[in-house]
Length: 168
Image (tube, rainbow, N blue to C red):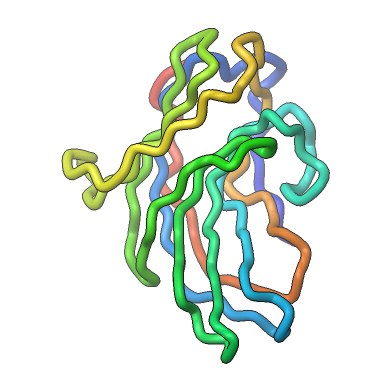
């Protein structure tokens, strides 16, 4: 399990704009029972922990979700934005493609939005993924560039780079 984070001190992230670039290179499953895998590429939180089972239900997470057919061949890849306690929204993606992301929240809002772009200037919008299940009083301390994965027998290679907190 990989975990990469930065501590910004208590109650730092309320209203924010955060940019980052992500790319899913490959994914595979080592089990006939494992037909999907979630890989946490970005998250905010108040608990110093991994993604699966140890983060709070109201932590915003950006995941790569991969599905496999019965022969273990990937049959769907998605970028998925949600809180730990919600279904969230997702957008289909391709392997080996960079997606340029912008995560935003107005201070005190219950809504956090992930915008996914096809270019670094963030002028060509591919998807807007929104979740409105976050507590309005919630402020976040940690920013995670990697927060582990669901337990299972799947692995992925991916990266997040150019992480930039634009405003708080």
